[in-house]
Amino acid sequence: MLFLHETHKVIGRHASAFEDLFRDEWMGALARGEGARLLWYLNHAMGSGPSYQVVTITAVSDGAAWEALARRTLAGDLSELASKLDSCRYESDGKILAPVYWSELQEVDLAEMPVDGREHELSVYMQDTGWPDAPLDDYIGLWDHDYWQFMRRTPPEKRLLDIQACFQVAHGSGTRPEAILMQKIMSLAALGGLLTSVEEYDPDTWPGSYMAKGLELRDQWESKLLRTSSWSPLW
Amino acid sequence: MLAPRRVVVPVPRPASEPAPGTFERGLVLFIHEVHKVVGKSAARFEDAYRGGWMPTLAKGSDARLLWYFDLAHGSGLAYRVVTVTAVEDGASWARLAERLAGGDLQSWARHLDGLQHESHGRIMTPLDWSPSIGALGDIPGDPAVHEPTIYMEDTMWPYPGKVGEYIERSGDVYRRSLGAEGSRMHMSIELSMQAMPGAGRYPEVTLLQKLSALPPLIHLLTNDIPPEVTGPGSWMHQALELRDQWRSKLLRTAVWSPLQ
Image (cartoon, rainbow over all chains, first blue to last red; front, side, top):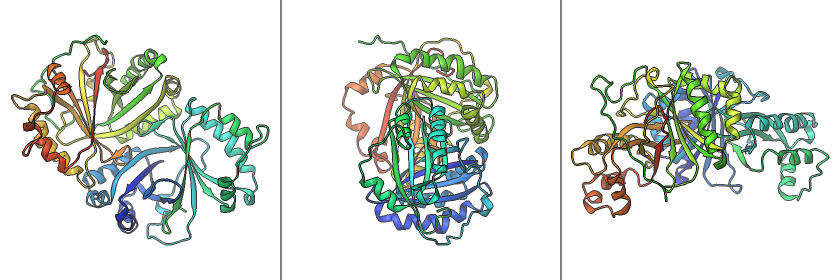
C-alpha cells in the first residue's frame, strides 16, 4: 500500500471553499473507484508555521491504483473537480510514501474508511520530517530501536506522542533521504511543556541518549503541528 | 575559464518513428530527479549511474535510464546532476521503488546516499503533444560514447486553474514557433511533461529542449529580448495571462547518456 502525501498552499480567501470541496465532493468522488481513499485532512495549526496550508494523506492500494487516480485527476472523471480545487490553491506539493518495515500502519481497509463526512472531535498531530546525512536505512533503524521502541514501553498516560505511522519517500516521488513520522499528540499539557521548557538532555538516559545518538545521523528535521478537520476520516 | 564544448546537431527523427503524443506501450512515466552531489564524489556518483543504474535497469523491461545530465557549471548551482528514468507505468514504478527500498537495489541506493547530499524527484507524464521517446526496449543500456549535447530545461508554474490552458497553448503556439522557419533559438522540444498529481509540485510543466547550435543561446544570454518577441501578439506576451514564473536550466548530457 502507498500513501499520497500532499501539502496544499491554499488561497486564504478560498480556504472554506477548498475544505468544502474536499469534504463534500472529492472524498466521495475518490470512493467511486476501488483503489483510493482519503485518510487524513489536516490543517497546519496557525501560529505554528505557514498560513493556510492543508496536508492531506490518501491511501492507494498499489502503484497501478496511484496511476489510475492520477490519470482520473488529470484527464478523467475527477478533472473538473480537480480544476475547482486548483482554483482554490496556489499549488500543491506531493510525494508518495511507503511504510517503513516497523510502521504499525502498513495496510488500510479502504472499504471501511468513512466517506460521509461524519464529525468528531479534533486531534492534533506532530508530523516530523527528517533528512539524515547518513544512509536512509540507518536513520529508519535508529527511529525503530532508539525512538519507537522506547515510546512503546512508556505507559500510555505518560506519553506525549503516539506514533501511528512511519514512512519513507517512494523512489523518485520526492526527496531522498527523507523519512516521516505521523505522531498523534496524546497530551496537550506535555506538548506545552515541550514548547516552553529548556530541556537539557542527559545523554545516558532516554530521550537524551536518542538525541545524542541522533546527531550522528542527522541534525535537520522539521516538526509540523497539524490539526485534523472535524470530518477527517482518520483523526 | 571553462573550455567551450562542441554541440552536436541532432539527427532528424526517421519518418517511421511514432507520431508526437503516441507511445509504444501505453503512457510511459518519467522519474525526473535533481541530485545534489557531494563534490568530492562526483566521479563516483556518475560511475554509480553508468555502471550500476543504467545496466541494471536494462536487464528488465520495467524501466530505462534515458538521460544523465550535468547542470553546466557557470550557469547555476554547482554539482547538480539531473537524471530522467522512464518506467512503463505506475505498477512498474512501484516495483522499482520496492527494489530500492528493500530489494536487490537497496545496497545501490545506500551507496548513492553516500555520494549525494540529497535528491529531489518527481514523477511526470508526457503532455498530449509531446514527442515520443519510442519503445523503452530500444533505449540502449550500453550506449556508445558521443559528444555532449546541450539542453535548455524549462520548468513552468502556471497560475491557479490555468495549467490546462497553458499546456494547450504552449503546444499550439510555442512548440510551433520553435519549429518554424527562421526560429531564433535553433532548439527542439524532445520531451514535454507535467507532474503527476501526488508525485511532485502541481501544477508544474517541464520542457526538455535540445539546442542544435550555441550562437543563438549566447545571443539570448547577452542581449535584451527585442520588443517583437515580448510585445502584444507574441507568445511571451500572451503567455503572461497563464504564467509568469519559470526556471531554465542549461544541462549537458554525459558522453554516455543513453539519449543525447
